[in-house]
Amino acid sequence: MAVDQATVLALKALLAASGQPEDVARTIRYRIGDEPAKTVELGADQSDVMYQVSLSDRFEPGTTLSLSLEELTDTAAGYQVTHVYYVPDDSPYGADPGAVEPLKIDIEYERNELRQGDILPVTARVECVELAEAPMVILDLPVPPGFAAMPSDFQSMVEQRTIAKFQVTARSVIVYLRNLRKYDPLTLKYKLRATMPVEVTARAAKIYEYYDPDRKAQSDMEKLTVVE
Image (cartoon, rainbow, N blue to C red; front, side, top):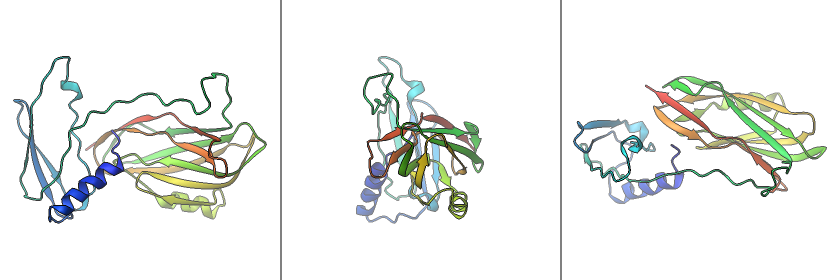
């Protein structure tokens, strides 16, 4: 499940206001109903990590569950209880099923189930569909929660002049293309590293023109699972 960056920042602000240090190890014990208690260990290097416990498989119509949490390390860790659901994205080109998107992007993950520490090869394919050439094209390639990008892959693309430049953020890699010509699709191969156990739906990759952001397209979302 994706975690909104604003949520992480809000919890960090609450922690800072409490006067407790951020970069310390934390131990949290939680219990769901009458089930045996479970313990979560978060290392000092995981101060920005939000650990999630899904209760989806325990809910049925009319079900009421109790949840208790205990902070064992006195570090004032924050928590939230949230309800999340997904709806399909609306087409940016209206309801006409015959509308042709001017650009196209597809993301292919080599596999959907990994172990912590594994390397996940990813292939992004982009194409200009409508015009003879799309100038100054931007790609927004997702970095799902629990994964880290490997900047060396994109640096090699810059050196080979496949891309103009790139920028790595916490949630994505932004790639800049000087142009994209019709009938000349571009394929980018890169890798992500699985950093922690997680079940997440990777958000859609996006492509758009820098000078005309309404000319855009996006890929499908993909579910990824990482186990210890």
